[in-house]
Length: 306
Image 1 (tube, rainbow, N blue to C red):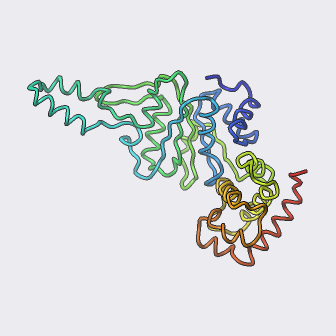
Image 2 (cartoon, rainbow, N blue to C red):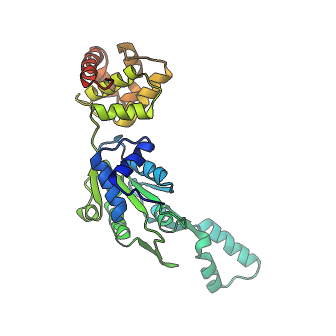
């Protein structure tokens, strides 16, 4: 696996995977690869944080190992656990065969064959030629105790399994951590990482994302949807619209054979772009026409098609 030799190369690698990254993000990813440091990406939901890890793995031709974080996540779900069902079965077979010896059983039962490797251990012992991309997704959802454990793991890239011993990383994985900032992550963890905040894109960048990801969308439709979403983000909403919703919306409108936006179509498909009933109610009716008018002006002013 050859890492990109420059920031330009990296931007091109991402673009080849249809990921439009600005210079700041590309620089952070490039340095994370070069310095072998974890990359911490924060930003609102749906701005493309998780996608960075996916396109990086795809672009580098390596495996993506994903740990989805949630409240109560612990070592047995994140690192490893013993396959108790298989161990019990093995004990019964030993007993039935009259070959049960406590010492021998302990040695055999606590071996690699009975070890269930969860994502963090998989990333350390993957055994492939190329280092995998380890995605630790939405770390802010996990408990602080788990974050403390992760800090230790990222410091040494090793984990101790009492029955076996210490397992070291064969090749240090490329680590991407994401957070939606539902809580602050510890400074100690942040110090281990390179950091980048991914913001909502401006009109030009979002339009480029839409045309790259949904190339079959008519130019007029792509322009209007992008402008409409940009207007929605300036509106007081419970939950702002992510880029992933913009793409879902454009794809749905293409499936409906729409060439451009009109109030009736917007009303019928609002549930694709707004995932909150209060937000849908707030935008419905006259508000749709106002936003469409403003979006039309915004789209014309951008000159993207020129």
